[in-house]
Length: 251
Length: 251
Image 1 (cartoon, rainbow over the protein chains, first blue to last red):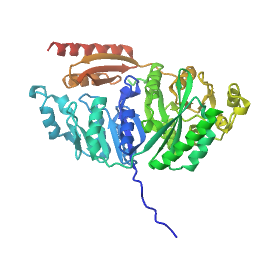
Image 2: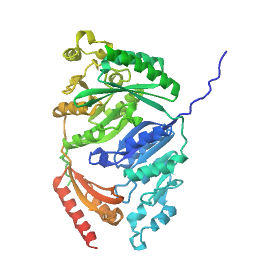
Image 3: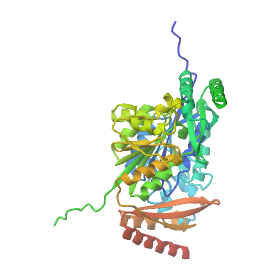
Image 4: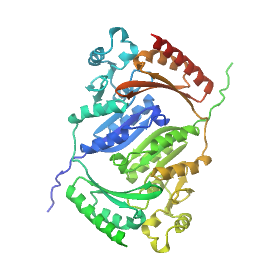
């Protein structure tokens, strides 16, 4: 008898495109990747890839097109300000093959805090939005991001990016959240538990089981992380890992 | 008269491939991108792209092959430990189409601190190195990284990665270092100086001139960064920017 395969899990995926010379030169240390990763994981969207590219239109276009064909959503950060090095909106329009022009909705928003005599060309540049895009609210500094197709375009300043992500999150399709449990292995060497952990991972092909060493005061401090969509399987695997670690600790 | 174009600048480029589910889930906040970016910039290597991919061999292979064809060097971090989720060495061998096996040089290193009775399959796994690779010294925890073709494979633990980068740096080809100067614009709005900055950037096509807003206590605090290989041009541009900012501050 052939059983019909029932889709019990909905998988929603994402890519993150970080745009900015300042990240690649090391001048600015990115704070958005970790935040977006944790946030998306928390709402049941699996971040599958991150790319960091410079403020160069063809580079942005190529990376964006590769990622938007592959994932449910692509989030971008950076490059939407008023200065000449802010290329993101033009690059997104080029990637989608749509026109870009000053959006009257953004001009209306800008007009709430920019005096008419200060509404210069540079500030109007922030109102350039690809045709067909929805605006993404910016509760911090008003100038919005935008959403076109499956691409959500956000600011690079962390506080503003976070506000935009919070504004857009309720409208996103989300999947089953991933359950994650961490087991501390401490100073038990990875090399001591790797064989048992590998055998266990083979028994749970639907779980992601990772071993993560870190160094504290020059000594390894290891953690094992079990992640998956099925909580009871995660709990089972965690119990099995706890059991073999306890055995090793006694030895 | 046609003048021959003399190559006065040697440009050495790099890509960085960060490998690990834990970065994409947000469980681990990456500390390597910013460090590698700043380090490479400091020794005259231009970091042009970063990608973060999961512990999945075909994903690592595809990203690596795309990047190693494009840049002078590709650096990887993560996935070279003894556990089943450490896929990097196998993926690198697959990308280069070479065999991989236990390297007697690494077994000899491991034997200095692993007792014979503890030399299990998992620990031997750390000795798997693609054929044709050179070893990269690990002054912190001994197990080496490796270097094959233009790809340098390093650990993910920041302290170990940094030791490996320091070990390999003297052997890297390097280009002219980039000179970088930061001018504080403070609370002068980007929208106020964007037009003048843009005009200036057009006069200096060889310089990278960026405007970087950040928020401090809910207010914008802006900086302008001028970067380039030619120090006297950088100094010129910085002086011009200082002049127009001073004019705006007076107004």
